[in-house]
Amino acid sequence: TGVYIQWNHSPSNDVVKELLFRREEKETKWMLIAISDSVNRMNRYTDKGLTKGKTYYYTLVAVDDSKLESEPENEISARMIDTYVRPA
Image (cartoon, helix red, strand yellow):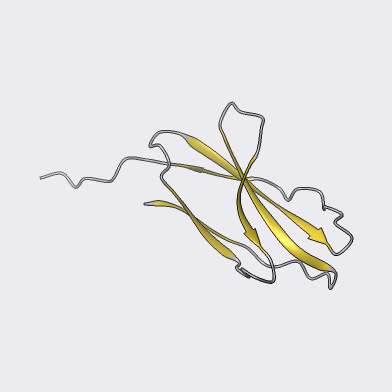
């Protein structure tokens, strides 16, 4: 199990890579978890190995061919929950 994230690539012609970051609740530092570039072009990622009961936040940054970074996209959040068990 994990968090499935999908995004639209930047429409700018000079973007050479996109950086996906994650942080945990109550933390301020972002951790780079995936890079989409010419070698590894992707627009989806499954973040695995997360802890149940915690909330995680994600943001995306585009980098252009001059190595300038965009402002981070609006963050999204996901909370890992226990597996649903159907009552007997």
